[in-house]
Amino acid sequence: MAVDSTTIRPISEIEDLDNIGFLIHETAQAITVAWGTVMSPLGLTRPQVRVIAWVDHSPGITQAELSGRLGITAMSLTGLLDRMELKQLVKRTEDPADRRVKRIFLTRAALKMKPEMEVIADEFRQALREGVSAKDLATTFDVLSRLRTNLQSEKR
Image 1: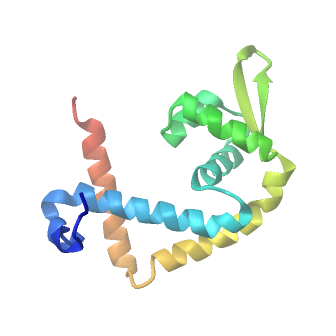
Image 2: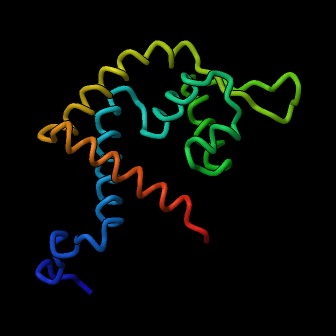
């Protein structure tokens, strides 16, 4: 059955203060798509950039720790790291104290592309924040942080 475009309600009619989760999700999705576009010249996806950022911040981080930091399952992370190893961006090594534990390190290739990643990321953030005052941005961070805290403290 074909859908007539006149029957689809515009997003502006759907969004309201009672549905802030919808707006946050749609914004996050738009950021993800745009981020993938700006990083594509480097051959990187958003998850790969996040891995590089976390491993650069914490060289030798375990797969379990990284999975928690990224908020993805261990199985998803394994596939992601497999693809990154094929691109020679990361290497996994056994922990000397426990061979079941894998530690992740960046390769020279990943370290070499970091400066270009940072330039692209800075330009992206500037474009993202265009037309948003510092005060509004601070308020947005504060509100989103409070919403996250409320959700994390919610007993389910």
